Image (cartoon, rainbow, N blue to C red):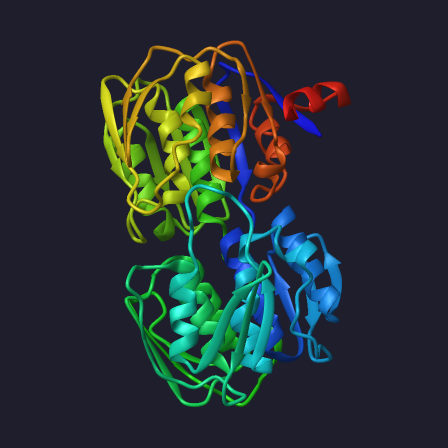
Length: 430
């Protein structure tokens, strides 16, 4: 086990290259199951979640060949097994995309209930509702989701989601790609990685229209053939580094982004007194004056993303005045608040609302990451805090951020990875 040690209070200067989108990659890689041939996927982020999902495909019998650091070739044409091992599948939330992909290709799937970050129930009821509507039988037993198309093949139909769900939208798109007939998904999510999944599938021969709107139409095709596809840049990684500059000060060029995808984050930072200059595929983010209070409510895209909620909270802790942060997606995403208080933050939480009273400075202290984005927010707080901050349980952060230490050191941050002695690790665990 390792930890991050940050000597904060230093502004950031330089440039940071953004990696491929985690949330797109963990949907596109399972989609390779639908391709009859070799698909080459470029701009893949080097993160533990991607490694896990590739390992699952290999265990199922796929051929996975690493071309370079960000490119793999996947051939799933020889897979005949649709049962994912419990040991691998339970470690990652995105394993549920394998259900839709395998139902579409094989007509059956057995996948462990998903793991990943725990901040609320995160039920898969909307996924199951879609599978049932498309003619599948779904049972949950022994820690597994067992699904089977009753007619041997998924059937096109109309699917209406009770709530906007990114995961369910992507899963039903996968299930519908090789289904018989037309599937119409209503009240669909609109996030950039949904459009990216649709573009990947279409580039391989799928027939998907309307991704990025609230109605997606998928006309099932007989087969997908191989091809090459490059994953979009990671909106949340870019937003995290933008928030780091906002909190710590300085000027950083955030490279390899799609500025349109960043507008929901950019607009809030500008409200807070941060300067953001848009270029073709980069943003110049700077902050030298005081941070101003604002109110933020997380919402489905194009609203402010829930995956940026902890990071913007770290910035609001240093803003002049009182800010109100409302979580509009998940029930239990404030578990990091007690850790922030160790640094001197003033935050009161009531249900889905956090009231943040800005303080003149944060002071370094030990913290423990409780999930992926909360861990990233603790890094931001540590960069802005005076003194030394130590962050444990960094495996959460490495699920979704490629080379975060190297990238931050490249813009002047004093951050390093330190090995935690075994005795300390056991004491912490107890």
